[in-house]
Image (cartoon, rainbow, N blue to C red; front, side, top):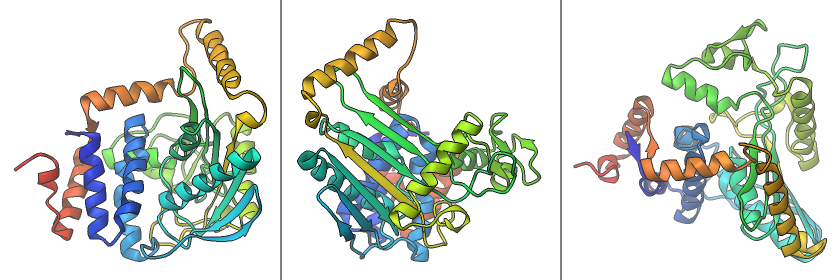
Length: 343
């Protein structure tokens, strides 16, 4: 079946509210979740929602904690999330980075003791909407083996960059692995195979079985280049921000463990380098040059198409995910059918 973005948002907010999450925080989680599904990142949308609920039940996601600033300068800050929802902590991190960027040209915020935050591009887009450049990186539970190895040590370590423009949505949001771990989890739930050249099993052999891949390792994108980028992100989102790294990172895939990953969030003010409108016009000119070269895409085009498609057709819910949501609703005495438009 399919649901509207508003239906999904309402379901997420109401269920979280029943579980003691303040409505303001629940709204942020819902916005990030819907953003993921509309853009086509279904592995990080409502399909990931049951994981967050498990975290709430286990106490690895806190509902009454507060974000604290441990260190701060005019351009930087280190935030301690105190194990609140990752969405809420990252949202505050980008807000603070933007405040600093508007004053000094750049804001750089490190985060530790947070949780899985959904899609990184939501937060880089926050900067874009303020005519700032947004950059977000994070490390995750080990999923990739180093080149030549078979033991997962490095996370899928996402990177998102959003750039303001007058005419286009210019944004990239990607894992540094050949596939996000969430896509493997989604394929397993749906009973689907994964593409070739994406993952290895526990013995280091290529596999298209998502269950075997989750027990093995995901390949880096672009071979040694993706591995090198993931390696560097592991340090910038680990030791630099006082978070864990390598095999000590837990809690992004397994909600029963306290999350130890880190985030690094940056906002850059183009107006501190020159005229803002000239910068945006230059971005548009570059995009025009790219698009005039043939039937080509720029980073962000597919997301725009997906948003138009899913707003028109609705966001798909596979049968197993729908069953999970029904079981959750029954346990919480939540009238899911009313929000799905059914009697």
